[in-house]
Length: 234
Image (tube, rainbow, N blue to C red; front, side, top):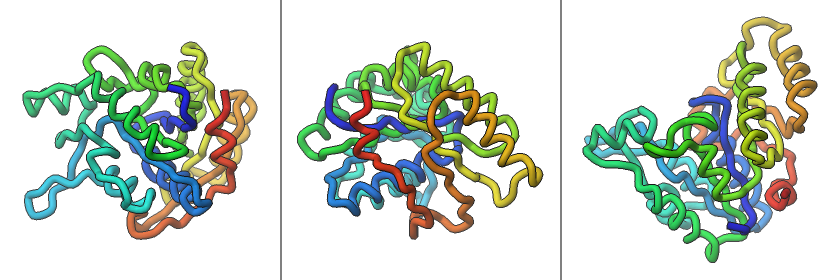
């Protein structure tokens, strides 16, 4: 697949991939660039009036202007908060490998830029046979890696970068995300940022502040990055 796009992955689960993907989408939409958001599979539902709601899908749907059906954003949703293959098994189902590709191809004639968001970390199982990294290789988009700014971030980030390079994936850059209201110590964030910058060998694109409110009701961050330029990185 050779259309323009970015593949947003993370160093772990719950590092803010969906929020960052939504910020990128909003920036592109505000520039008048037709933008799609695609999450091949989502697991972990909330329930409202006994109806399952997938928060990630709702956030992405809002970010691209609520103009595309939710089933195009994420064609495979499972209720349990587990890795997709395990969540699917609890529903006597499985993740459809072929659908992941065909559903991504659908966006080709709909938008100029497609943002693909993975699940969990880069080596998270996404079907019984492949990981998120395998799908990233197939789609061929540059990676944006979201890193949680906390203790352990250096190791998690460097492992993710190394795994990506072993697969010849292009890394467009890193997004450092504050997922807690305050760092473990006053020195933790500057030293973590410095070590990641020095050792990873890829640019830190932006740093996202901690947000207390539910981001689905309003975006509190703007990331001053030329996403369109990054999407054309090869």
